[in-house]
Image (cartoon, rainbow, N blue to C red; front, side, top):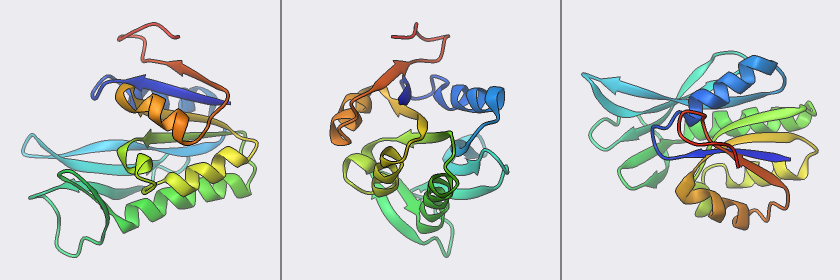
Length: 164
């Protein structure tokens, strides 16, 4: 089964994903954490839930560090090869270990272009693993159609709306 945590940007989706993981401590996965410099968001890092290890994931134009190895781009965001490789590795390890549950933060425009975590998520769907994934309201129907997900449930962080 796939469970989607939906909502607009800044609605608490990632916090809800982390809370769900912490309440069960089963499986593994990752979440995005926003990075700031002088009060301005400069991008995101990926944090593995089971280990707390963090890797640079995205940076915005003007905040891309020297030596950054860009794999993909969406608008003003550059996504690092290192960050995407790290997240793919977490998903692959979960598949290999036959995890009961995997937490994915988040699916969106890159995956709709068949980039980012597209292939890893497709493999995850083929495994017999429950998936809890963050997906913005604006993307969730397209993600469900793209991956032909037959069974899923949608819910939003409680401070924004009731579960569907």
